[in-house]
Image: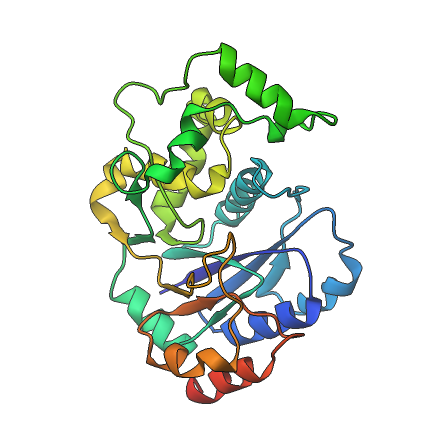
Length: 281
């Protein structure tokens, strides 16, 4: 079972190196998209062997904009272009960390070949707070000067609500997922062929949490989707970002049946990563 890890990162080269080392396996390759706003030189030693490489077509990533979608798609294209017969492609952030051994992760995915592990909720029925992301015009991707929010208000007051194309069901939630290589190739090809996709989602807020689930749910791959992205995340603080995991979360991490967890900051608490390394050894 061959596995490609795609890591979207923007900071903390030491923590990224630790993640890369932890993911290392004879049947895996690791690809890193480093935000183009970040100077790459301190990160270059991470790719010290032929199993680790940086994505060449880097994008400047801005929170909430389509840029992170484009960065992900560019990265998928480069991974597919290698011609390596990967079974799954696993999308992680630089602040994620495996909470199972690499052998366990590879064995699990080998037993679930062809499956797509995504947190996928119906926007209409299960994730209604995301409806404005689709119905309203969001101009963040246009990089307009000051006054963008006021312009958005004016545009949305004048124009009718946006709608998905007829027959397309909007799905989404977490941007992180593990999917079969075939489904990733389908996504890349679909975005190229169906020009409405990029046009529509460039006007959506946080399109990275919507676009991939929506494409696959409305495709022949729907039957292979599992509503679980294999990621332990704690949203108990009720903030826009999940709780930073520390030694306070050690017991929950060890007890979890997930493969990965987020998010961590080794500068704030590296002991929890040491703890994970011990129980996943």
